[in-house]
Image (cartoon, rainbow, N blue to C red; front, side):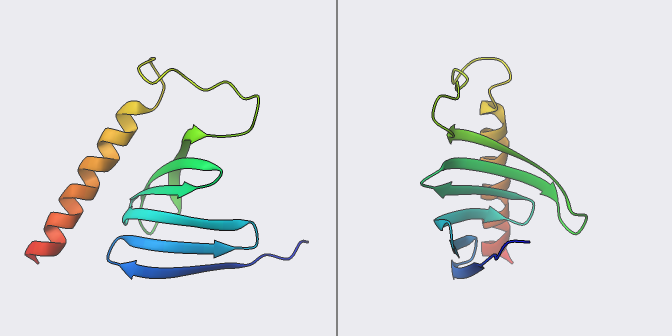
Length: 98
């Protein structure tokens, strides 16, 4: 079993800086929908809070030599970004109106 380290620092509601032994990343989102930006690329994750069930997809970056889907190609995950953005906006508005 290998040694692991992870620390998450909340900057603002919905914005976190993540520190680990493999690097630094930034996460933006609400419970159930998050976009993570790191030197390894951008990853979107949607899930059902409290269940442990989620779906995650790399939308840019990735390993060298790996073929990336065209931005408008069917199945490229572009629609997922729009869904996550909509969830984020609704969550942010809900937080402001609460």
